[in-house]
Length: 173
Image 1 (cartoon, one colour):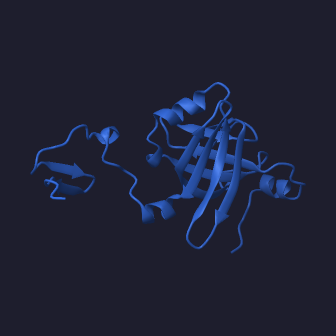
Image 2 (cartoon, one colour):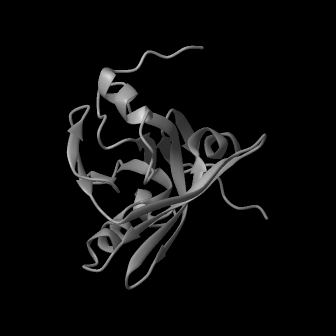
Image 3 (cartoon, helix red, strand yellow):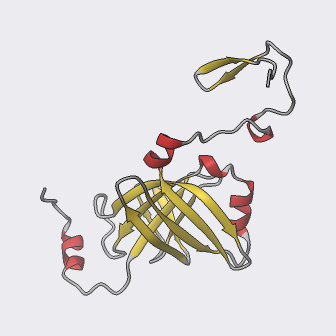
């Protein structure tokens, strides 16, 4: 399927590539939008230049995944991921040429879910799995204090969980 590209993107395609550019956006609060090849605004989002390494992206029959490594020298990124509900964070990754940032120029690689985090003194390492893969095989919410469950409810109590109504029963185990 042919794709029409902008004139600036066509010019950049004809040059020798010296560095692969990645735009990485997380739906955290506050939103984190980083790029490894410069700061710019694209699609009403401000991407800030940062030491971001995208690696291990793979696409297979049963799973898609990879990893993102972000510099954490001032502990800002580490603090955001320590306070976040990791199973609910989405990570969008685009491949980009910094000299061709038209509306359709960056290529979206996928939307990922974070499945593992390693917060070090100098970097935050995130393991990713494609959102569609993870949603198909495992729940993303747990019954724990983070989601509002702070005590054992008595027999017969009702809980609304997304689109379901659950009645608590005694453990007959």
